[in-house]
Length: 352
Image (cartoon, rainbow, N blue to C red; front, side):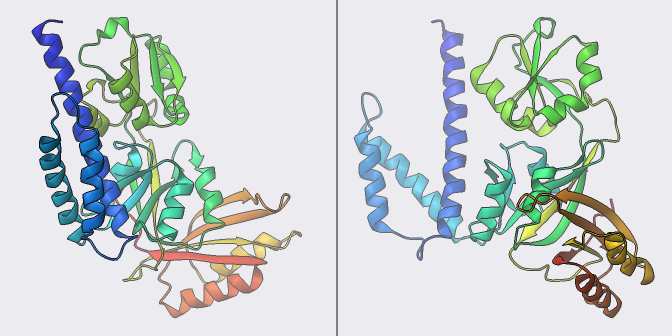
């Protein structure tokens, strides 16, 4: 192995070390929610003894102990800060993380394996907020999220819409002429179908756009690229070959922000989910309440109930503040005319 290859190997190891340190800090912030005191001398001694036992060859035990002393000092420091955590589905660099940063740059994004985990961790109090995609301008409703909204006790406290620009990313050392396959989430691949066909690239589904970028960096499959966000290029040191792979430049996704408590300052938009009598005019009877009150409805979606086949839940967003008497009356009457009704929340709509 020559000098450049050794340096390249060191760079790859440094990347892994920093990535794992960041992940450790994220777990430390979550752990804070589950313990009484930041300082736990017994647990810290246990950690030191544990890592010393892993010390072999050139990584001497005293060096590892000093290193982990600094790591735990930093963990205690961030645990003492009043940091607010927001969960998102996927790996770092996901569009959901971009939405979280745009909604509030002061939040600490925490990656979650699934939408269900986002909901569960917010409900358990390990996260302050969750951010989930609810609809895409091209693909429509995100069905899994809508299903979870029919069962959750969480409140919607905000929304954010972001334009989705899919980038074609590759390893810096990759010759673009040798590209054969592209990995990404199936929805992202579908939104770039014409571009992929034009470049004669084979689409291969992956569980997450950012996960595909992470996989490319770590596994380095031959002749492969990914479709992911511009943020992924920065996080995983990938080269941007094309910044606009999407077939339609109007592609955008709307995200909802979830919390255990209602929005503190009210808002100008409300979200509800309800079921209605399975008879002619049943749905019209509920929606007529909005029309009679001259309330503008901005969204309606339907989803079959997983626990009650043959029946449907209806998701409705409309303009208004739930502190306003007129809106209060609308909510009360919609509830009376429904067979099941959940007020998801009132929040400030994203006008951008």
